[in-house]
Length: 85
Image (cartoon, rainbow, N blue to C red; front, top):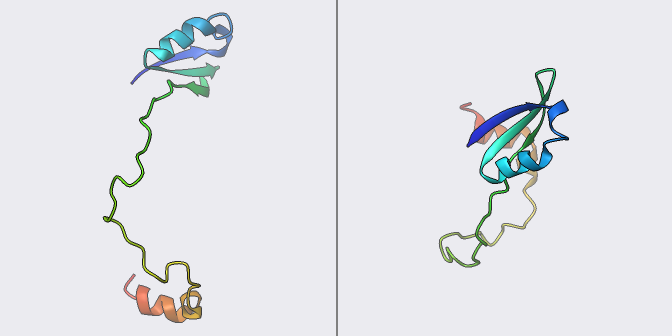
C-alpha cells in the first residue's frame, strides 16, 4: 500500500482530494510538526463469511463449559505442567 504524509494545516482545504487518493489505495498519515497524529486508510471490502464452510474439522470436548478444577488455580497445577519452563 502506498503511503503519503501531509501536515494537518493542509488537510481541511484538501479533504476531498485526500479522500479520493485514499479510495485509490493510498494510506495518508496526518502530522503536526512532523509528529504523526492520525492515519487515513481505505476500507477493505471483505466477502461475507459462510457458515459451515469447514464443518467437521473442528471439535469441542464435552466438558468445554465445565469449571476448571481447583488444581488448575493452584501451584500444584503449574508445577505439574510448567516445571520445565
